[in-house]
Length: 271
Image (cartoon, rainbow, N blue to C red):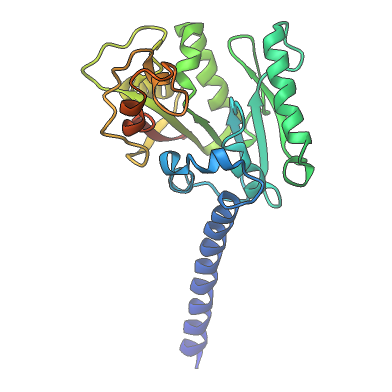
């Protein structure tokens, strides 16, 4: 009789765990399918694989997550509804009080976008991530996950010392066991990377080195966002490719056929 009861309890627990996983997956799929997303952003899912990428990082709807340098909010559109009810989204972005007028305007545009749809974004916390001047996005040891998408190359021009400070700020913000998820344009190992990553592409080994120097451990790599059609050799760098088409109509069909860039997708853990 006791064995029967124990078996029934074990089965119930397993079913409950399975249901929780399914519910979390369903919540992420629902956020990706949300009508609040911009149609032009949805059209890029085929290149950006948001479900597979976030699932690879191990995101859960109960987490406190920092999205660094959200830009126009492509991933914010997904993360905000996903984390709204049970977790917390912090955007580490431009500074409203920056001495730079362009940065202030960018921060104002982003905040206006959030304010335009409070039903989705009114619980998003705004932090400041403004290399190399200010890193005020989360208290130390308070965050479950930090994610950033195609941004590391933008920070390279601040210099190697600041890159150490920058990655140290990410490490400090995370709880022990916390996750850093990085997606970045990938430069083939045989090509030379300049100090400023001016092409927009970076060596995977170099990005891993930046994180490991801050104390992170590489947990996994994924080819979710790989594109073998991209040789990372374009006039104007990665911005020649869609969606930017920096060269306008010059070789546009060629770049359209390539699609978006070849990207590394890396998951790090704070021990």
